[in-house]
Length: 268
Image (tube, rainbow, N blue to C red; front, side, top):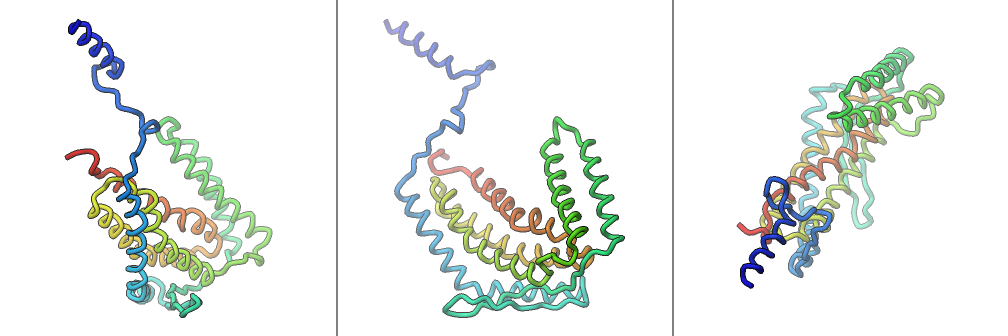
């Protein structure tokens, strides 16, 4: 009887073995996460703590942005200045610095050169290996499609473009500031609920906030530089692909890095 039970256990174990004898792990789509009350409470408490910390550090962060703009603008665009947008927050005003570099409309020569590069670039994507680099082909074609729509708009309605560089940069950095305050709450919903140690949750959040606090001013300073030299023709591409969308992708990358760390429920 005991031998039959042992044989039955071995047969049952074969159901969870692969061709080479290795164990077949449960697919992540079937894995059930057991949420602990402490993690759920932490997912509410930690974002609140980081939000209060950001409020306390808001003036130093904006001062850092102002110093970065003041340092780089004379070196990359002597004609530019650091402008300030006043944001009405109800109880008080917030002085948001942003780079102010002149950016005009495209002339006929730039329009035709950009059109030729866009068409040639779209044709060149056919040379990208389909099997291995198919996602890269889609990304490149999406970027070229955005630039193509910008070319059409500036061809038929060159004087009706609703944005200029100062308004775009001011709005973009305003959105970046809001995004900065949303980061802890995003991690609270997607990261803090898992059984990572408190120090890893704090560490990932601090790294993420520090990265974006430095990345935002440099990102939009680069946008201002591109717009000054390449005109408003490239503003749609900067906004749709290399703006907040790129920031979301970087947040996902940092989140994935944090998710690769060992959790407390996985053992040592």
